[in-house]
Length: 284
Ligand SMILES: [Zn+2]
Image (tube, rainbow, N blue to C red; front, side):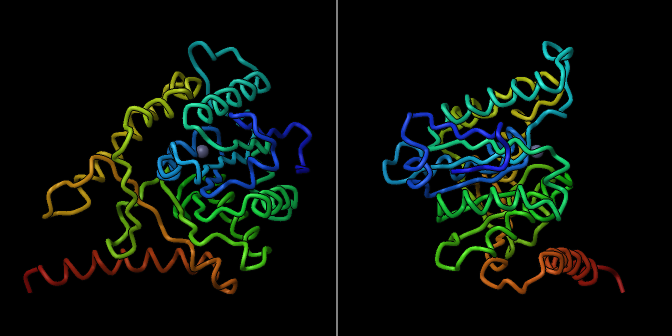
């Protein structure tokens, strides 16, 4: 496996060869930063946990060097921070029993440059080697540029592969902006009630981010709990944790479908839902 950055790393927690570790993949998450996978792809981690025939692959696109820092980590240089974040991602891979963890180590700017082929080529090589059945990434309505850029690069990478090796399902998941606003018919509901303790551990290893002043661990678990209750207005809670996703699979079934108009359609259905309810209930 040749990746663009010489500093890229492929970490296999159980020591299998890289080739075999990638080839056993069934579920994969491609995120922009260290900790994004644990916030958005935990459904895949749980699907694979303790299953010999299912393996989770984590892929982080950027080097994580530019992240905010405080406390213990306040004085760290960008380079030292990059190493801390890598170490944290490897810890998560061990805790979550991932089949493989890939750190592509691209500068954030490279992922946001549509003309930069390095990120695209890395993703193509990984997808071809791993051939996941289910693929998790950022949703197209996320409000972090790097997240949306990574999702767009991933869609481009998938479209360059023959159809028979593309995943059966491509899901756009929640980090910076949740998907509660999707109309219910557009929501993919992922039950992540199981192993809440392990979910807490997966989020908790990213100490440099949490000590940086952001309780991503509590916020992410709180979001999952909130979705479980607020998803259905009438039914009683059947799950204690829910994540929502946007089904991006149509974009890899039809290469002509523009991701921009695809996202616009979700927003239009949300706008119509708000509009129609008020229109129906207002005094005339
Ligand atoms: Zn991120």
